[in-house]
Image (cartoon, rainbow, N blue to C red):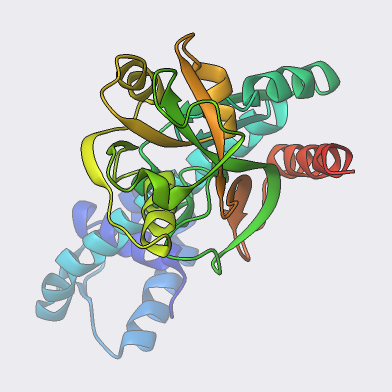
Amino acid sequence: MPNIQYYQEFAALSHYLSFSKTSEELCVSQSSLSKHIAALEQELGLTLFIRNSKNCALSDAGREILPYVEQLLEAHRSIEQIGQEQYRKLAQQRRNPQICIASCPLIGAYRIADFMAHFSTLHPEIAVGTSEFEPGLIPQMLNSGDVELAFVRPFRTGMSDYDSIEFVREDIIAVLPKSHPLAQESFIPLAALKNDPMILIGEQAELHYVCMQLCQKAGFSPASRFNGLRPDNIMALVSLNMGVALLSQNFYEYYKRKNTVGVRIMPTASTSIRLIRKKGHKLSRPAQIFWNFIKEDSKNIHK
């Protein structure tokens, strides 16, 4: 394929229709310009200009390809702009490295902000932040590269597309009003709650799927009275004796109301919070440092 410069010179000569004027505008000698146009014509197998001693005119073939050449040059300019923008972004990242981490709505209950603050004290040169999103959006964001890392519960569709670090593992417990007949028990069979109105976290949350699976394994489908993403609302409804709930241990402890109790269920069940990344994706240097930080911390937590 001819050098892009030859197409640029062809477009300029098509505009000025003068070798001397074109060479002056492009800061190239007339002999070089003439050789480049001749090389382009030979490569394409077309006569692009009709020449005379002073000026030139576009041939029929030259007029026909000119719009396509202009499109090619516009595309080339756009590609160059993208490259320059990416270069500026990379240069800025090197000067001010940063990480944006996606998370389901669980930052407070799992002290994720505390870990980020500790990371920032160790790596003050890296700006780290997180944003909460509905669980269903996070796989799309990881797949598109909008974020590199995310704190999530394991997806119901599976985790084969992601590398992960277990950040927290916790039990699923029953949350009951203190007035509930089983509130004083240390353990209760989950099936014992089959006739109670169940207040579940919303269907968008992976925890909803986990709780539904537990109920089905216990032999019943819960009579759901309320679905919502906010555990504090669930706790409020339980405290008002509107029903019972299944929640993770950390959610219960973080949002606990004084007239509610958390009771372990049988059979026992657990869930986890994981830091994940798209499998095969090479992390940026700041994201890799954070990944290694959480990996090392998780080893200490699970000792």
